[in-house]
Image (cartoon, rainbow, N blue to C red; front, side, top):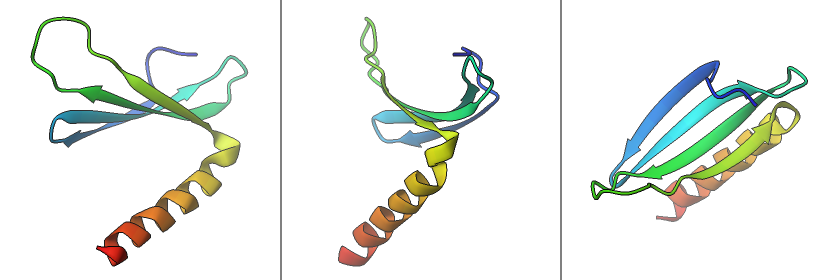
Length: 76
């Protein structure tokens, strides 16, 4: 996995920062890496949470996420 993303977007959300990065795997296939990093200002290592979504599942992932967003907005 490449350490430098091909494309990256940052979302600041209160006490957390989210990064959505596009990388390529060892076979040259693109995938989405979503990272969550706390904005904690105290010294020490920050705990990063990551998920990976491969290109062949992006449509399903996106549709599911859109459905969840719609549910949350309409149920509130």
